[in-house]
Image (cartoon, protein in one colour):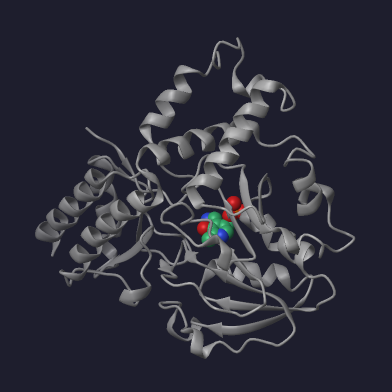
Length: 359
Ligand code: PMP
Protein backbone atom coordinates (compact mmCIF):
# COMPACT_ATOMS: atom_id res chain seq x y z
CA UNK A 1 0.00 0.00 0.00
CA UNK A 2 1.31 3.47 -0.83
CA UNK A 3 1.51 5.85 2.10
CA UNK A 4 0.59 9.51 1.62
CA UNK A 5 1.39 11.91 4.44
CA UNK A 6 -0.77 15.04 4.66
CA UNK A 7 0.89 16.50 7.76
CA UNK A 8 1.03 20.30 8.03
CA UNK A 9 4.57 20.13 9.31
CA UNK A 10 7.00 18.62 9.90
CA UNK A 11 5.82 17.24 6.62
CA UNK A 12 6.43 14.94 3.70
CA UNK A 13 9.81 15.20 1.94
CA UNK A 14 10.59 14.02 -1.58
CA UNK A 15 11.36 10.27 -1.60
CA UNK A 16 14.40 10.91 -3.82
CA UNK A 17 15.80 13.25 -1.17
CA UNK A 18 15.34 10.73 1.62
CA UNK A 19 16.89 7.93 -0.44
CA UNK A 20 19.83 10.15 -1.36
CA UNK A 21 20.37 11.11 2.28
CA UNK A 22 20.10 7.48 3.39
CA UNK A 23 22.75 6.42 0.87
CA UNK A 24 25.26 8.96 2.09
CA UNK A 25 24.27 8.85 5.75
CA UNK A 26 27.44 7.10 6.90
CA UNK A 27 29.89 8.50 4.38
CA UNK A 28 29.31 11.79 2.64
CA UNK A 29 31.06 11.82 -0.76
CA UNK A 30 33.95 9.65 0.36
CA UNK A 31 34.78 11.87 3.34
CA UNK A 32 34.35 8.95 5.74
CA UNK A 33 32.00 11.10 7.81
CA UNK A 34 28.28 11.59 8.16
CA UNK A 35 27.23 15.19 7.51
CA UNK A 36 26.06 15.21 11.15
CA UNK A 37 29.60 14.56 12.30
CA UNK A 38 31.30 17.34 10.34
CA UNK A 39 32.60 20.58 11.70
CA UNK A 40 30.57 23.44 10.34
CA UNK A 41 33.88 25.17 9.66
CA UNK A 42 35.41 22.30 7.69
CA UNK A 43 35.68 22.39 3.88
CA UNK A 44 33.05 19.67 3.39
CA UNK A 45 30.28 21.42 5.25
CA UNK A 46 31.27 24.85 3.93
CA UNK A 47 30.71 23.40 0.46
CA UNK A 48 27.33 21.89 1.44
CA UNK A 49 26.11 25.20 2.91
CA UNK A 50 27.43 27.33 0.06
CA UNK A 51 25.80 25.07 -2.55
CA UNK A 52 22.49 25.10 -0.67
CA UNK A 53 22.54 28.88 -0.43
CA UNK A 54 23.42 29.30 -4.11
CA UNK A 55 20.65 26.90 -5.15
CA UNK A 56 18.09 28.66 -2.97
CA UNK A 57 19.05 32.02 -4.44
CA UNK A 58 18.83 30.56 -7.92
CA UNK A 59 15.38 29.02 -7.29
CA UNK A 60 13.94 32.29 -5.96
CA UNK A 61 16.01 34.58 -8.23
CA UNK A 62 17.25 36.44 -5.16
CA UNK A 63 19.02 39.65 -6.17
CA UNK A 64 22.47 40.68 -4.94
CA UNK A 65 20.83 43.36 -2.77
CA UNK A 66 19.46 40.62 -0.48
CA UNK A 67 21.07 38.36 2.13
CA UNK A 68 19.89 34.77 2.55
CA UNK A 69 20.40 33.53 6.08
CA UNK A 70 20.16 30.00 7.50
CA UNK A 71 19.22 30.49 11.15
CA UNK A 72 17.42 28.79 14.03
CA UNK A 73 14.51 29.66 16.27
CA UNK A 74 11.70 28.88 13.84
CA UNK A 75 9.02 31.25 12.68
CA UNK A 76 7.82 31.78 16.23
CA UNK A 77 11.33 32.89 17.07
CA UNK A 78 11.16 35.32 14.15
CA UNK A 79 8.05 36.88 15.70
CA UNK A 80 10.45 38.44 18.20
CA UNK A 81 13.56 38.51 16.02
CA UNK A 82 11.93 40.56 13.25
CA UNK A 83 10.88 43.46 15.51
CA UNK A 84 14.28 43.47 17.22
CA UNK A 85 16.03 43.71 13.86
CA UNK A 86 13.73 46.17 12.14
CA UNK A 87 12.29 48.62 14.63
CA UNK A 88 15.19 51.07 14.45
CA UNK A 89 13.92 54.42 15.70
CA UNK A 90 10.27 53.63 15.00
CA UNK A 91 7.74 52.45 17.54
CA UNK A 92 4.89 51.09 15.43
CA UNK A 93 4.36 47.98 13.32
CA UNK A 94 1.42 47.50 10.97
CA UNK A 95 -0.05 44.00 10.90
CA UNK A 96 -2.60 42.37 8.66
CA UNK A 97 -4.46 39.81 10.75
CA UNK A 98 -5.55 36.87 8.63
CA UNK A 99 -5.54 34.01 11.12
CA UNK A 100 -3.88 32.08 13.90
CA UNK A 101 -0.32 32.65 12.73
CA UNK A 102 -0.86 36.38 12.26
CA UNK A 103 -2.32 36.50 15.75
CA UNK A 104 0.77 34.82 17.19
CA UNK A 105 3.02 37.32 15.41
CA UNK A 106 0.96 40.22 16.72
CA UNK A 107 1.01 38.93 20.28
CA UNK A 108 4.78 38.63 20.30
CA UNK A 109 5.41 41.96 18.59
CA UNK A 110 3.42 43.73 21.30
CA UNK A 111 6.30 42.99 23.67
CA UNK A 112 8.54 45.23 21.58
CA UNK A 113 6.37 47.73 19.75
CA UNK A 114 3.04 49.41 19.32
CA UNK A 115 0.96 47.26 17.05
CA UNK A 116 -1.53 48.67 14.58
CA UNK A 117 -3.80 46.01 13.11
CA UNK A 118 -4.30 47.71 9.76
CA UNK A 119 -6.81 45.13 8.51
CA UNK A 120 -8.32 41.91 9.79
CA UNK A 121 -10.54 39.13 8.54
CA UNK A 122 -11.49 38.03 12.04
CA UNK A 123 -15.03 39.36 11.38
CA UNK A 124 -15.59 36.36 9.10
CA UNK A 125 -13.61 33.78 10.98
CA UNK A 126 -10.45 34.39 8.93
CA UNK A 127 -11.98 33.02 5.74
CA UNK A 128 -10.52 35.64 3.38
CA UNK A 129 -7.66 38.09 2.81
CA UNK A 130 -8.79 41.73 3.28
CA UNK A 131 -8.34 43.64 0.02
CA UNK A 132 -5.56 46.22 -0.07
CA UNK A 133 -8.12 49.04 -0.33
CA UNK A 134 -9.29 48.26 3.21
CA UNK A 135 -5.88 48.44 4.88
CA UNK A 136 -5.48 51.38 7.25
CA UNK A 137 -1.71 51.67 7.37
CA UNK A 138 -0.03 54.10 9.75
CA UNK A 139 2.28 56.71 8.33
CA UNK A 140 5.28 55.90 10.54
CA UNK A 141 5.35 52.10 10.73
CA UNK A 142 8.74 50.38 10.84
CA UNK A 143 7.27 47.73 8.54
CA UNK A 144 4.07 45.99 7.45
CA UNK A 145 3.75 42.34 8.44
CA UNK A 146 1.71 39.76 6.55
CA UNK A 147 1.42 35.99 6.81
CA UNK A 148 1.14 35.03 3.16
CA UNK A 149 -0.14 31.52 3.83
CA UNK A 150 -2.14 30.75 6.97
CA UNK A 151 -1.37 27.10 7.61
CA UNK A 152 -4.34 26.54 9.94
CA UNK A 153 -7.06 28.58 8.23
CA UNK A 154 -5.94 27.74 4.70
CA UNK A 155 -5.96 31.28 3.28
CA UNK A 156 -3.20 32.45 0.94
CA UNK A 157 -2.25 35.71 -0.74
CA UNK A 158 -2.34 35.26 -4.49
CA UNK A 159 -1.14 38.85 -4.92
CA UNK A 160 1.66 40.99 -3.53
CA UNK A 161 0.47 43.96 -1.46
CA UNK A 162 1.84 47.36 -2.42
CA UNK A 163 2.76 49.20 0.77
CA UNK A 164 4.86 51.92 -0.80
CA UNK A 165 8.24 52.66 0.74
CA UNK A 166 7.53 50.86 4.02
CA UNK A 167 9.25 47.46 4.10
CA UNK A 168 6.89 44.53 3.60
CA UNK A 169 7.68 41.57 5.87
CA UNK A 170 6.19 38.18 5.09
CA UNK A 171 5.92 34.98 7.08
CA UNK A 172 6.02 32.48 4.20
CA UNK A 173 6.62 29.40 6.37
CA UNK A 174 4.04 27.20 4.73
CA UNK A 175 4.23 28.15 1.07
CA UNK A 176 7.75 29.34 0.36
CA UNK A 177 9.14 27.51 -2.72
CA UNK A 178 5.64 26.46 -3.83
CA UNK A 179 5.66 29.09 -6.60
CA UNK A 180 7.92 31.79 -8.02
CA UNK A 181 7.89 35.00 -5.97
CA UNK A 182 9.15 38.47 -6.72
CA UNK A 183 11.58 38.83 -3.82
CA UNK A 184 12.23 42.46 -4.71
CA UNK A 185 8.73 43.38 -3.50
CA UNK A 186 9.61 42.37 0.06
CA UNK A 187 11.88 43.81 2.73
CA UNK A 188 12.06 40.50 4.60
CA UNK A 189 10.81 37.00 3.89
CA UNK A 190 11.09 34.36 6.60
CA UNK A 191 9.90 30.87 7.31
CA UNK A 192 10.47 27.71 9.27
CA UNK A 193 11.75 24.98 6.98
CA UNK A 194 9.70 22.04 8.19
CA UNK A 195 6.86 22.31 5.69
CA UNK A 196 8.05 22.87 2.18
CA UNK A 197 11.82 23.07 2.57
CA UNK A 198 13.32 20.42 4.82
CA UNK A 199 13.55 19.28 8.43
CA UNK A 200 12.58 21.29 11.49
CA UNK A 201 15.39 23.31 13.03
CA UNK A 202 16.27 25.49 10.07
CA UNK A 203 14.78 28.96 9.63
CA UNK A 204 15.16 30.84 6.37
CA UNK A 205 15.49 34.62 6.38
CA UNK A 206 15.82 36.66 3.20
CA UNK A 207 16.49 40.29 4.02
CA UNK A 208 17.19 43.36 1.92
CA UNK A 209 20.66 44.63 2.74
CA UNK A 210 19.62 48.23 3.33
CA UNK A 211 17.48 47.05 6.29
CA UNK A 212 20.41 45.60 8.19
CA UNK A 213 21.19 48.74 10.18
CA UNK A 214 17.99 48.92 12.18
CA UNK A 215 18.56 46.32 14.91
CA UNK A 216 17.92 47.25 18.53
CA UNK A 217 21.02 47.13 20.75
CA UNK A 218 19.51 44.28 22.77
CA UNK A 219 19.26 41.95 19.75
CA UNK A 220 21.00 38.65 20.59
CA UNK A 221 23.96 37.99 18.29
CA UNK A 222 22.60 34.63 17.18
CA UNK A 223 19.52 36.43 15.88
CA UNK A 224 21.17 39.62 14.72
CA UNK A 225 20.78 39.54 10.95
CA UNK A 226 23.69 41.84 10.18
CA UNK A 227 26.09 39.94 12.43
CA UNK A 228 24.86 36.65 11.00
CA UNK A 229 25.17 37.94 7.43
CA UNK A 230 28.75 39.01 8.09
CA UNK A 231 29.48 35.56 9.53
CA UNK A 232 27.86 33.67 6.62
CA UNK A 233 25.13 32.41 9.01
CA UNK A 234 27.86 30.74 11.06
CA UNK A 235 28.22 33.07 13.97
CA UNK A 236 26.96 30.13 15.99
CA UNK A 237 26.78 26.46 14.99
CA UNK A 238 24.07 26.30 12.35
CA UNK A 239 21.59 23.39 12.08
CA UNK A 240 23.97 21.52 9.82
CA UNK A 241 21.97 18.41 8.99
CA UNK A 242 18.81 20.43 8.32
CA UNK A 243 20.77 22.68 5.94
CA UNK A 244 22.14 19.61 4.17
CA UNK A 245 18.66 18.10 3.67
CA UNK A 246 17.26 21.47 2.55
CA UNK A 247 20.11 21.58 0.03
CA UNK A 248 19.01 18.20 -1.34
CA UNK A 249 15.44 19.53 -1.59
CA UNK A 250 16.71 22.57 -3.53
CA UNK A 251 18.50 20.24 -5.98
CA UNK A 252 15.30 18.19 -6.30
CA UNK A 253 13.30 21.35 -7.05
CA UNK A 254 15.79 22.41 -9.70
CA UNK A 255 15.55 18.95 -11.27
CA UNK A 256 11.74 19.28 -11.32
CA UNK A 257 12.18 22.36 -13.51
CA UNK A 258 12.25 25.01 -10.78
CA UNK A 259 9.44 26.91 -9.13
CA UNK A 260 7.36 27.69 -12.22
CA UNK A 261 7.13 23.95 -12.94
CA UNK A 262 6.35 23.03 -9.33
CA UNK A 263 3.69 25.75 -9.23
CA UNK A 264 1.85 24.14 -12.14
CA UNK A 265 1.80 20.84 -10.28
CA UNK A 266 0.59 22.56 -7.12
CA UNK A 267 -2.20 24.30 -9.01
CA UNK A 268 -3.35 20.98 -10.46
CA UNK A 269 -3.28 19.22 -7.08
CA UNK A 270 -5.19 21.99 -5.32
CA UNK A 271 -7.80 22.15 -8.10
CA UNK A 272 -8.42 18.42 -7.91
CA UNK A 273 -9.03 18.56 -4.18
CA UNK A 274 -11.10 21.78 -4.03
CA UNK A 275 -13.23 20.71 -7.01
CA UNK A 276 -14.05 17.48 -5.19
CA UNK A 277 -14.95 19.29 -1.97
CA UNK A 278 -17.05 21.88 -3.83
CA UNK A 279 -18.93 19.24 -5.80
CA UNK A 280 -20.25 17.69 -2.61
CA UNK A 281 -22.56 18.95 0.13
CA UNK A 282 -21.10 16.34 2.45
CA UNK A 283 -17.80 18.27 2.72
CA UNK A 284 -17.14 21.97 2.96
CA UNK A 285 -14.23 24.39 2.90
CA UNK A 286 -14.98 27.81 4.42
CA UNK A 287 -12.43 29.93 2.53
CA UNK A 288 -13.37 32.46 -0.15
CA UNK A 289 -12.39 30.88 -3.46
CA UNK A 290 -9.88 33.47 -4.61
CA UNK A 291 -8.01 33.30 -1.28
CA UNK A 292 -7.75 29.54 -0.90
CA UNK A 293 -4.39 28.06 -0.04
CA UNK A 294 -2.78 25.69 -2.50
CA UNK A 295 -0.78 24.14 0.33
CA UNK A 296 -3.17 23.66 3.26
CA UNK A 297 -6.75 22.62 2.61
CA UNK A 298 -8.94 22.54 5.72
CA UNK A 299 -12.31 20.86 5.31
CA UNK A 300 -15.24 19.80 7.46
CA UNK A 301 -17.57 16.84 7.26
CA UNK A 302 -21.24 17.87 7.34
CA UNK A 303 -21.67 15.63 10.38
CA UNK A 304 -18.70 15.96 12.69
CA UNK A 305 -19.71 12.82 14.59
CA UNK A 306 -18.27 10.98 11.57
CA UNK A 307 -14.80 12.56 11.98
CA UNK A 308 -13.33 9.63 13.89
CA UNK A 309 -14.62 7.07 11.37
CA UNK A 310 -13.30 9.21 8.52
CA UNK A 311 -9.83 9.39 10.04
CA UNK A 312 -9.77 5.67 10.85
CA UNK A 313 -10.70 4.76 7.28
CA UNK A 314 -8.12 7.20 5.94
CA UNK A 315 -5.37 5.64 8.06
CA UNK A 316 -6.33 2.16 6.88
CA UNK A 317 -5.84 3.37 3.31
CA UNK A 318 -2.44 4.91 4.03
CA UNK A 319 -3.73 8.51 4.04
CA UNK A 320 -2.01 9.84 7.14
CA UNK A 321 -2.21 12.93 9.38
CA UNK A 322 -5.46 14.40 8.04
CA UNK A 323 -6.75 15.53 11.42
CA UNK A 324 -7.35 19.29 11.48
CA UNK A 325 -5.47 21.63 13.80
CA UNK A 326 -6.64 21.33 17.39
CA UNK A 327 -7.82 24.96 17.42
CA UNK A 328 -10.31 24.50 14.56
CA UNK A 329 -11.06 20.76 14.40
CA UNK A 330 -12.28 19.03 11.26
CA UNK A 331 -9.75 17.87 8.69
CA UNK A 332 -6.80 19.40 6.93
CA UNK A 333 -4.89 18.08 3.95
CA UNK A 334 -1.49 19.70 3.49
CA UNK A 335 -0.35 19.13 -0.06
CA UNK A 336 3.15 20.55 -0.18
CA UNK A 337 5.59 20.25 -3.09
CA UNK A 338 6.59 16.72 -2.13
CA UNK A 339 3.00 15.41 -2.21
CA UNK A 340 2.55 13.71 -5.58
CA UNK A 341 -0.72 14.12 -7.49
CA UNK A 342 -1.26 10.39 -6.90
CA UNK A 343 -1.60 11.19 -3.19
CA UNK A 344 -4.25 13.82 -3.84
CA UNK A 345 -6.02 11.42 -6.21
CA UNK A 346 -6.02 8.73 -3.50
CA UNK A 347 -7.51 11.24 -1.04
CA UNK A 348 -10.15 12.34 -3.55
CA UNK A 349 -11.09 8.68 -4.22
CA UNK A 350 -11.45 8.13 -0.48
CA UNK A 351 -13.52 11.31 -0.01
CA UNK A 352 -16.01 10.05 -2.63
CA UNK A 353 -16.06 6.53 -1.24
CA UNK A 354 -16.66 7.74 2.32
CA UNK A 355 -19.45 10.01 1.17
CA UNK A 356 -21.12 7.13 -0.71
CA UNK A 357 -21.04 4.92 2.35
CA UNK A 358 -21.96 7.58 4.95
CA UNK A 359 -23.70 10.38 3.04
N1 PMP B 1 3.99 30.69 10.87
C1 PMP B 1 3.32 29.81 10.13
C2 PMP B 1 2.57 30.27 8.93
C3 PMP B 1 3.32 28.46 10.50
O1 PMP B 1 2.65 27.56 9.78
C4 PMP B 1 4.06 28.04 11.63
C5 PMP B 1 4.15 26.59 12.06
N2 PMP B 1 3.06 25.80 11.85
C6 PMP B 1 4.73 29.00 12.37
C7 PMP B 1 4.66 30.32 11.96
C8 PMP B 1 5.52 28.63 13.57
O2 PMP B 1 6.67 27.99 13.16
P1 PMP B 1 7.71 27.32 14.16
O3 PMP B 1 6.99 26.23 14.87
O4 PMP B 1 8.78 26.85 13.25
O5 PMP B 1 8.20 28.35 15.09
